[in-house]
Amino acid sequence: MIKKILCFCGSGLGTSFVMEMNVKKALTNLGISGVEVNHSTIDDVMPGAADLFVCSADLVANAEKAGKAIGIQNMVSVQEMEEKLKAVFEA
Amino acid sequence: MELLKKENVQICDAAANWREAIRIAVKPLEEHGYVESRYKEEIISNVEKMGPYIVIAENIALPHARPEQGALKTQIGVTLFRKNVVFEGKDMPARLFVTLAAKDSNSHLDALMEISELLSDEATVEKILNAPDKEELYQYFAN
Image 1 (cartoon, rainbow over the protein chains, first blue to last red):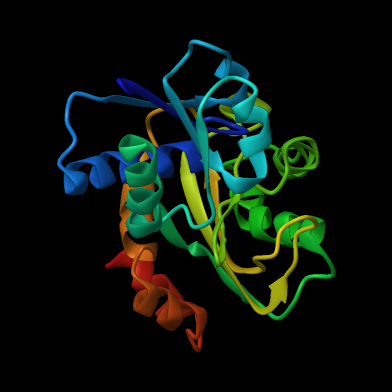
Image 2 (cartoon, one colour):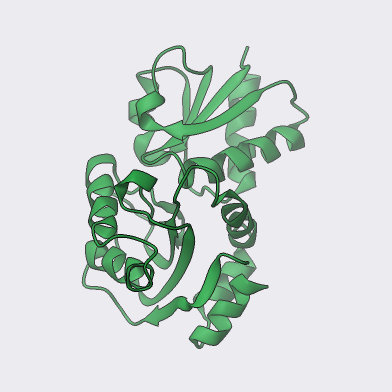
């Protein structure tokens, strides 16, 4: 069960926040509720910090060490976010 | 958008490399006192350490670092390069640089939300990339 999603980037205040907004929009579009979404820096990425990590495609290898993760190419695209989240939630 | 001032909008032909592009994109904010002179180098060092996570989509970069890395006041700058800027290890080049200075973790979020909305529309991005002059470039973000 995915109850907690953490979006992260190198600094924790730009890219990660844009992703957080789009994760929230994508979840709404997918009809998924009751998921906590936050944004932070790569320093907070550790096992147990979230059920799913979302980051830019460049950082996904780091995230996978901590748990389930998806890497995003286009961070302003709600569509890409939706497709990738759908695959994880349906898995 | 309240956080963007016309004095922080610019159009440049090309940058020698991505490091130069970041220095150019931060320059207006530095000249107008929104960031310390070390801010640009902190951004470059973040990218060197963590990869080009600031390239948020095809053609779009969002150069930024942490408040404690030299951001003095919250502000946004917009730089459009006519020629592609290539980041090592990234197959998406960038031309539109939206530089972000955030003095804390919250004061920039509304502006960032607006920017993200604006740039999520590909047709709008196309228009912005082809803005003929600084005035028109500014208007896309101001309205």
